[in-house]
Each structure stands twice: as structure tokens, then as C-alpha cells.
Amino acid sequence: MRRVIDLEGCLNFRDLGGYPTADGRTVRWQQVYRSDALHHLTPADVGRVRDELGIAAVVDLRSTAELRGEGRGPLAGEPIGFHHLPLFDGREARPENWPPIATLADRYFLLAEIAQAPIARLIAVLAEAGGPVVYHCAAGKDRTGVVSAVLLGLLGVRDEVIVADYAATQENLEAIIERLMAAKGYQTMLSALPPDTLHAEAETMVAFSNLRGGLILLGIDDHGEVNGVQDSDLMKIEERIQNFGREFCDPPVKFTLRKVELQGKSVVVVEIPEGSAKPYWLKNHGPIIRSGSTDRVMSRIEAQQLFSTAKGPFG
Image (cartoon, rainbow, N blue to C red; front, side):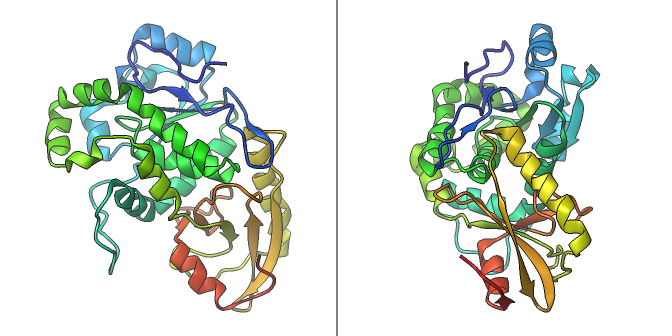
């Protein structure tokens, strides 16, 4: 299997399959892809994406302004699902008391914090698409890199493998930046960024990996209130989560679910495979179970605060 998909219009289109997990499994090939901007696809590329790769859905992580300015490209005319899930859209403010941004890893952690809802929804799309999915931003480096770290971590891939996947963008980064700088809309944005953001060094993802949490928590709403999970919903929740593990890992990832009493109500803790990279805390109905517009990712600090009041076993 080839990891890099050679396309005329895309410079960073890659298969996330083949990566080993900490417990001896393998992420399935030809199920999920990461890419730079798909609006550059040529007619020949469209044929490959549609017929050879069998892409069932596209997830666009770019902002509304980027989508409006650059468009969806030729895939807009194809019978392929489309989900616009911008990780930031020009309105998000830095959380109160957020520490100073000193490195690109700090920027990624802030991005993950303010993009909690689209990250959770994106993973739900992956679990429900019914076929291969590709997600992308403009360069396939920053927003796409953060999402890839979350997804691979959830499947149990070790940190060092996630770091290597991120750093692989470096191979074509010069050409990617050159193309972005040729687009008027991106010239202004890129020129305003510090020079240290225009790289894909392994050290950045190493630092970012150290900031991530460890379990999935189900039954918390968007405001941190404990709604609880009804016993009648547990079977549906487990089915959806185990389906995610079956679709993307071989042999399938087997997640362990436990009920815990939190503020007098039942929530569900989903354990990540032992020894794996540590994905973000996820709350509400997590990335797999949808709960309207309130799906989002729980920060490590939020989860620790909630857990301090919980009753039940925690590892």
C-alpha cells in the first residue's frame, strides 16, 4: 500500500492506514485520508478520488472565508458527502487566563481548545460515513495535523508514530507554502504569522502530544452540566463506539465502557487502549455519539475538575 497518494492538484494527500497501535493492531488502509486543499484537484484527480479511492465524504476544516474565497473545487459536482467543519472561523476568542503563546505547539493546543465542537463532530462523521473519508485544510499541516493526532491517538497509535505522520508534511512543505503565497487571500494571513509557524518539525508534535488528556466521558453537556446517560441509551452508545473501533483498526479496537456516578447522575467513561497515545478528553456524547450542536471536546482541566467530584472507579 502507498501512503502518499500522487495527485496532480494536491501536494499532501496521504492515507492514514498502516500505522501500528500500541497493542499490536493496525489502522486500516484506504479508510481515512488527510490532505491539503482539495479545490486544486484536476479532472483526472477527481476520477481517482471518486472511483479508485471511493471517497464517500469530504470534511473541510477551512474557515468560512477560505471556503467562500477558494470554493470547494471540482468535487462540488460529485455525489460525495460534504461537511464544512472549520476548526476556527474568525470569531473564537482565547479562553480567559490562557497562558502566553510561545511556540507552534502552544498554538495547536489553543486550536484544539477552541475547536472542541468541530473536532468531536468530525470524528462522528468518520464513524458514520459508510465509506472512506478525507479531511483537509489549506496546507494539510496545522488544522489537519491536529485532527490527525486526535484520531490516531483515539485508535491507540503511539505518540512517536503520530509525530512521524505530522513531520511527513515537511517533504512537500516548501511547495505547499509557495502555492499558498501565490493566492492573495493567503498572502496576508501567512505574512502575519511568526516564522516558526511555517514548518512541520517533529519537536512541535512531541510538545503538543504532551498536552493531551486520556479518556472519553459521555453524559456532559456543552456548558459542563451533568445530564447523565440513561440505561436505555447505553447499548446504542456502546454499539456506536465499538463500530468506530471496527471500522478503523484491524483487528478492531475494543473499548471498555464503565458507568460512574457524577453529581448524582450516571455518566460513561470509555477507556482508551492501554499504552496508546492519549487523546483529548471528550465530553457530551463524545466524538461517536451525536448530541445536536453541543458536541465538543473536553479539555484536560475541565475533566479533572469534574472527576474530583465523581464517585466510582477511575484508573
